[in-house]
Image (cartoon, rainbow, N blue to C red; front, side, top):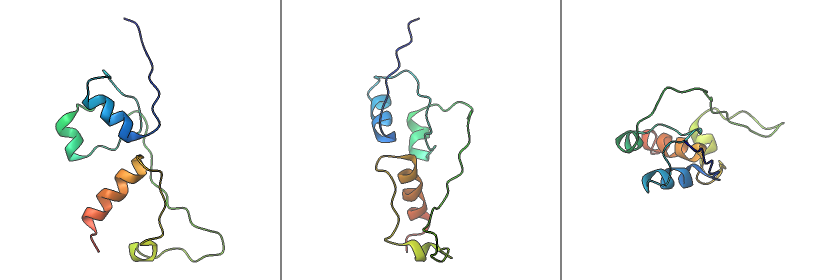
Length: 93
């Protein structure tokens, strides 16, 4: 079996290629969501990542989600964006 590696730039691109059947498997930091569980079979994780909030030196540490509302930046189409969407569902205010 010949292995072909297809690099992608975002989680969105990866998910799109999987949905279209252009890929047989993916090895990436893909956040498991209920929607994705409906579409894909997830194997055991081989690497765990803990999300981190990075803030500017000399500024106070955010005490709550309200402190970062409207100020948060993540890469579009990334697992970080997926995490923020999930957090927004759980914390709509």
